[in-house]
Structures are given as C-alpha cells and as structure tokens.
Image 1 (cartoon, rainbow, N blue to C red):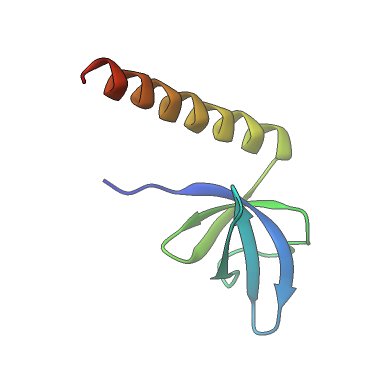
Image 2: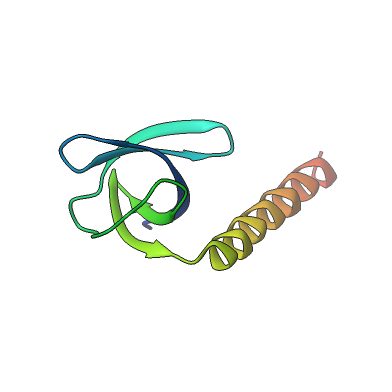
Length: 81
C-alpha cells in the first residue's frame, strides 16, 4: 500500500527542491512535478516528490483524519493489553 501525505512547504531550495514539514518532521523533497509552489503551500508528498498542491483547508482535514486514525489505533492497542 502506498501513502501520500499532505505536508507544508517550509523552505524553497534551488533546483526544484523544498523542505517540507509534518508533525515536527522536516524532509527535503523534489518539486519538479508541481508548478508555482510557494512557501506556506501544502503539497501531497509521495516517496520524496510533491505530486500536487493542496488547499490548506483540505490539508488540515486530511491531517486531522490521520490524527483520529492514530488515536483510534492507540486506544485499540491499549484495550488489547
């Protein structure tokens, strides 16, 4: 299964590269597949490449859904002990 994650562009670098962040984790990725990305934009990232830009509101919805899933798994793990 593949997972593409919305990440916020923190810094634009040379050669179509950028630093993105999610949950305190920063990663350098390629922007070669997406045009006109600006600092502060959200992009969908998969295996080190931005695939598309994403509206901030939609990114927040998706990230909240991921957080809900993580909390649900955590509760289920505690209940199984």
